[in-house]
Length: 181
Ligand code: 5GP
Image 1 (cartoon, rainbow, N blue to C red):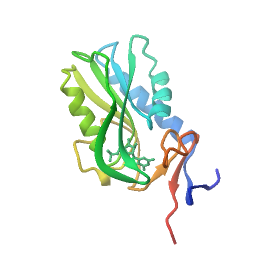
Image 2: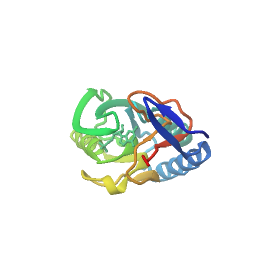
Image 3: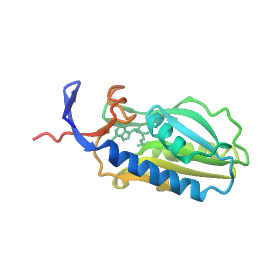
């Protein structure tokens, strides 16, 4: 794995494909173990979680489950704007259903908290969250996610679905913004 430069910023290798795959398998096993119904609905938060959701959903392998997609946006460049704009809604009926939200990363927790509240208002049986990455030191809103792939320090990362101004989502590994000397 080599350093990459996007729009003048350098990112250094942080998590390999193997590191990611191992944690995806573990989280999938935990989610599956805890499901109380055989037809939960998974809610993938676009765009960042698309790659994690594809791998996690396949690994969970529950034929009667469903997957839905929702989109919020709270980031501009490498900084959270602190605002939540709902872009794509959840049309599927979640009333009385076991809901598992699939997130790429929980940073301040604003997206996660808003999503939970919005879905809880639809009277599901339960709402849980599985996130690939979690920055516990940055959490300001709501509670910690139930399922976490990897806990990381409060640094800006890209790759495996996560972007820097819409770039870098296709990287198979995860990279971290290089600290300026
Ligand atoms: P929060 O609402 O928890 O502050 O931020 C959640 C959203 O911000 C994530 O779904 C993700 O889109 C974006 N985000 C937070 N931290 C990072 C990061 O380190 N890298 C990238 N690329 N996006 C991030």
